Length: 139
Image 1 (cartoon, rainbow, N blue to C red):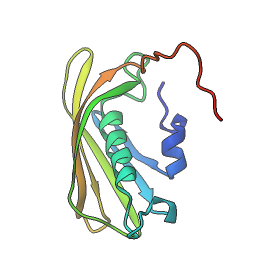
Image 2 (image 1 turned 135 degrees about the vertical axis):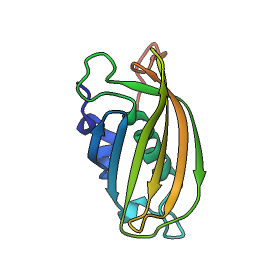
Image 3 (image 1 turned 60 degrees about the vertical axis):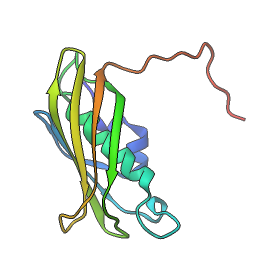
């Protein structure tokens, strides 16, 4: 079983799952000062992370033992608006799938419904293939 709560990066952002299943997901996040850029607006990298998560989680089944993990193959993002406070909602929807790869789209919206960013991507079922022979050391 894949659990959203097991994702330490999304957990560190304060992102929470609102709904998940049937090829769709909704992820909510309250903005914190650490999410903002120098202009005081939501940092683009945080938006990218939410879009990637929404696209990715939309295609996996939280109750499946076979298709419960995926990796991003490609992700195209369009930034449309900005926000400085409040919360955002990232919604993802599967648009097509095969045996090993699926396609999805996502949007991040403000509380008033304004679209802040959108994305579409392709994802492969399964976990990442690690290529390093030895673990990295932290200096």
